[in-house]
Image (cartoon, rainbow, N blue to C red):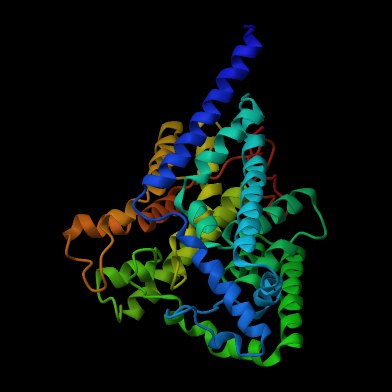
Amino acid sequence: MAPVGRRVAAQTAAVLALVALAALVSVVVPNDPWHNWFDLRVYDGAAEWWRSGRPLYDYTYGRTQYGFTYPPFAALLMLPMTLLPIEAVAAVHATVNLLVLAGVTWWLVAPLARRHGWPAGFSVAAAVPVLFVLEPVRETIGFGQVNLVLLALVLADVAALRRGSRWAGVGIGLAAALKITPGLFVVYLLLTRRWRAAAVAAVTGAVATGLAFAVAPDTSWRFFTATLWQTDRVGRLDKTSNQSLLGGLARLTDPEQPPRLVWLVLAVAALALVLTRAVRAARAGDDLAGVALTGLAACLVSPIAWSHHLVWLVPALVVLVDVAAGSPAAPGTPSWARSRRSAGALAAVAALVLASSSIWFAEADPGHHHDLGVPGLVVEDLYLLVVLVVAAVLPARVTAGRAAARTTAPSPPAGSSPR
């Protein structure tokens, strides 16, 4: 066999092995990775309930407490689901999310591969099953969630900023209209002095929200004045899958009434510190690190951050792999995190923790989080701990020829920091 043929055969075998490993992990992890599209069934039932003329936020799925918690704009977009059987809706959802995952992976990994002299096609094909096996990605697809779509919308704006497009900000605005927490990216745009993009994002979000108000004024008013603040609608704060600061505090102290003042202090401190790091990353020319940090900040300070919300670790892992492969880190990065070995080790540990669904080995019943002692609490909070470490030390990569003072210029996309 010719050398080229042997290389293609070896690469194909490696990709197939990774696909097989991903399939195996999806079967043996301690937490069911598919969940029978539970959240998608909630959305479908709520949309059908609303279409029949009943109040959207009165709906609960079966005998559970779970109802629709997204803004009315999201409900408007989900109304077409009611025209298809749930099995067809699930098939469409899974297909769309797999395509989004493939597209996002190409956008993130191909520039990195080319920069380091790796075959781009093979690198992307190998990365897809690796990213698929991470719990935030698996559970987004298995629950029928929208996190990958939100990630893609925000990353589309990173690409638009790079091109200097007048439409930069539309993706963030739509993401914020679909789910409130991506609104933090508008703050990121303001802090990095992308005034036009921030305005576009704000206007886009306002137009989408205004459309929902025009179609369903009472439903919209109820959401923003009441439903938005009812965190008990989505589950217990101390539930293992809630990997926010408040979730960790609830498991550590009082599952019913964690000390809110302590949480507020921690949340404000985390928000300030992580957003400061995100702005510094943008000033170094690394918007990928900037948006990854901003997304992780939103997960930390939100009262509820289910494990599938942590998709912002995906771009963070790409940054770490890039640094591990030799891309230089910007000044201001913690000294130990600048080294290739440290970045690679952190990426490997984070990926292993997420792929193994490690937190579920210490899943506890309500009020019994201390039964396994300190080791149990640590394992149950492993995703939160990974987010905290990554948010604290994620390197920003230097773009060749970028002066530190160029804070308002558009930044390069995805993995295209150092050249």
